[in-house]
Image 1 (cartoon, rainbow over the protein chains, first blue to last red):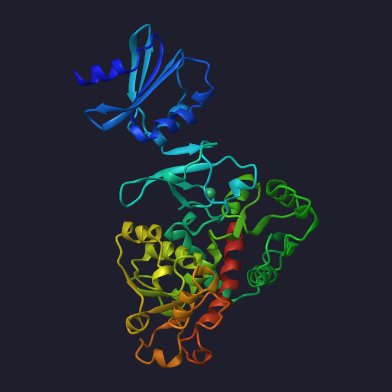
Image 2 (tube, chains in turn brown, yellow):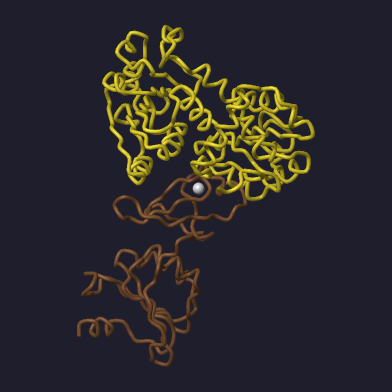
Length: 155
Length: 305
Ligand SMILES: [Zn+2]
């Protein structure tokens, strides 16, 4: 019931993609990494909506667009709880949770200013690992430094 | 075991326990008989994008004892690098002239990148603050030689454990040998949590101290490092700790008979000169072992041992 009311706060779209269950504090980050501020498609978004599972959540709806694997990886990094829902003519055609890839290439910058990837034309490469507190960290395959979510800057 | 032949060595973790032991065994052979002209048909390039005389001379000595030819440069002050040639282009060019490239470069991760673009194997002689695997191998060689084994030892590391890359790689490598670690440092230069996580994952024990003296009686190896003043944001704090981690001969009185004192060199004042004549001082032989280990590594990578 509750979910249904939340849905109503943001208009339904006919065809396109809904990104649901975004942690409320990362909605704008997701918006930015997908370049939605420059999109010519219709985009709706809401944040601080009530969610039974997560307390407060955000949601983004993009009309007439589906996302590729690389973009979904980006979403997973900043919003690991997100769900991607594809809609065609008001019918849900696909619904899946984002999953963190084990490895990402050329998606984020290395935060280490001395890293070779910041000085030569080298595509960045990271392994996604968990630290001893279970927090997600990115391990640079070049300088071998690990960075947390707070240092992520997308290319 | 993967083949060592034709493989780059960028980080000590590129090698398994068996591969590390194999290099150490070959190095023992060179210790017994250093002059083996097995490299007479080969050229090794030493590309030092930043000066490190000690490391470069050790590598070049290793190549010379093997009878190989050497090309290269000792600093980035050479025309192509100055003109802004990319690292990739330098590596591809030099790989036309040599069978193996030894590289030191101030950029973190530069050795991994070089190994990806190079058609010939790369030996990392230090990539910025990241890795220096041949230092690690010579430390392991020195430990095994003086203790007769690498297994089940109590290794104490003293000084700057936060920024000292040599101690980080050494912890990673020793974690393969059931080591008990004793980390001695000022509060602000403690071993990073990523390294301690590594120890924990290996199921091993570590103990942390700010006080130096209590580890001396239990240690098999005392691995001393330099504490650099510029690491401290507050000069007053440096003044407070700089003399707390100096080893002198009297302190070794109740140490084990088999204890050896190691140091990656150059030292400043962290080991008093009165230790030098104590048979437990091993840091100069340790540096000499570097040549045997580098001979072994070069010979193994070129498939000659
Ligand atoms: Zn990096």
